[in-house]
Image (cartoon, rainbow, N blue to C red; front, top):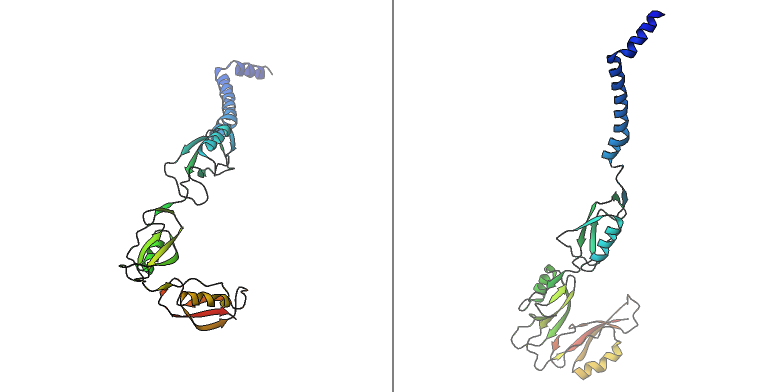
Length: 253
């Protein structure tokens, strides 16, 4: 019994034992700090987060104010992008996307819309109708109505000009009218477009223009047209024709 008391007293007084106990306690405290404080700090659990607001379609001022109010920073990318949906100057793209949860203070990158892309209408003078269509397509434009125009020096079938004129700005996808030379038209008359009209009402107009009636072909209508409705003519409308030219018709039976 005395021996046990002696050993107990020795352990209490021993510097080695005291140091060992202190070391154990320190390890426990260190493990607690690492688990509860250090690791969560590195994992971002202490960082406040929030949803990124929706900015697409907003003006620059409105987008910046919305981000500031939500606790985020912003950065505008130098290069904008063309858009047919979002007007120029408005936010086109944001990163991170709207609704995504991110750390407050994070920088949201913004891209401005440049609006619809404008294109300079190419000069098509001297080109054929086919070449004109190809040039417009390559420029991002659409060849629209072909208009026949009289010209003393430009050969028949060659482009005189465009509507709007070459050099003007148009938006990508716009339709451009092309004026094609009908050559020298002295003594000739322009054949108008009779499509959609009733043939009985066309006869007196033809007579007044100095043209005659050629063959008439009857076909079944496909869009509910009334019987006698003109579908097309030969020659085509827009041509300059000499007097007494016979005009063939395709009409609804």
